[in-house]
Amino acid sequence: MPPPPDDPLVAAVIRASFDNTPDGVVVVTRGGRLLACNRAFEQLWNFPPAMLARGDALELRHHTARQVADPDAYLASLARLAQTDTALFFDEVPLADGRVFERHVAPTPVPGAETALVVRWRDVTARHRAQQELAALMDLAMMDADLVFWDADLRAGFMRSVNSHWHAMLGYSRDEVPDTLDAWDALVHPEDAAGRILAWEAHLLGNTSIFECELRIRHKRGHWVWMQVRGRVVDRAPDGEPLRVAGLRQNITRRKETEARLEALAHTDALTGVNNRRRFTDLAADELARAQRHGQPVALLMIDLDHFKSVNDRLGHAGGDAVLRSFAATAEGVMRQGDIFGRVGGEEFAALLPQTTPDGAEVLAERLRQRIARQPATVAGAPLHFSVSIGVSAWLPGDADAADIDRLMVAADRALYAAKAQGRDRVLRSDRLA
Image (cartoon, rainbow, N blue to C red):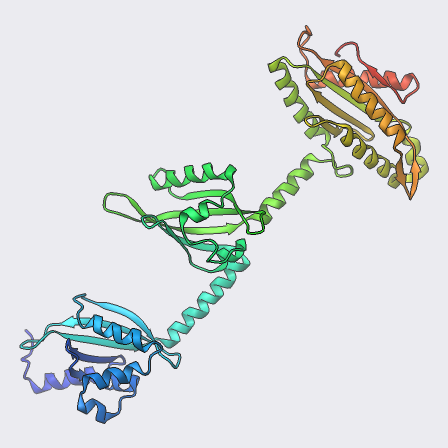
């Protein structure tokens, strides 16, 4: 049972509680008349006692307005709050001296009088500064990690980045690329757009627990920046329609570049930069299978540098390496687009020539042999002439025997050693597959 409202003890307790609460509390009518305030309210706003005693609503408003950072916006907010029916209104009011006050407003019925507004003020400057410092540290951490948090409003088509690093990461200003889904979609690499859309739609439909994809976005300078994008629907309408998606983007360009370098190391001969044996045989086998499916001729060259051991013996491994690099560069200049070239042994190289007859392969091999004869390597600043021997094998659509890449290489190898036996520096064709 509540105590009677006119009980002096109860009134004293209520008044003491009201006066000693650490928050500033003021009760005013919708018309602005001051009904009550506590000491914390007086101290927060530095009210002279005489001003409060007069209770002039306009004077009280302007006294507080002079202390805030934006007086016009503050006075406009007071006019709006006088009309509010919201059960609880909350905002923050920055002051001109750098402090920040938190404001809670709650309409409260008063028996026998118009509805009053109970306004609670709290100094949250320390909390606000801590939040700003934390936000700055978070922003710095995200910048270091190339991370960006994002929030997409699907109905409005608007996408907000929580930190400013997103535009800077791609070289744009906010004026150049607005924060809309369409504007950012337009910068996605054409090869990645379909995959992004499929992953996005699958998540919005509820088929996946998370939206995730990797894509390239065009930097202002024209190059592509790899991004890993993750997100999740965080708000849906009662009928299940997705309203908001929030998530994280991370710049993974360095990771992609590292992966590409590792892949290149796995597939490339470190000395010459051409395909290594494993990569050559994989590519050549695929191309041979394609040629056989389509009934197209294919030829293979096995190439060996003549007297290479004597080069190493006379000039050392550095001299031998220079000759190998020179040969590889010259050979790549002779190969046509679509030809597959690689180093398959110490001084042995191979080339698969798609859509090439045995006669055509001999012509290309002879062109390479002559180019090598005319173009010496440079070792220690001096020219060094060398020659090559080349064996040729081929598969034609009318051949009775099936061929695989190993049989083609063995046949070309047999022709290569026949060329060496006949004096080197020549091209010979194999008459049959191994």
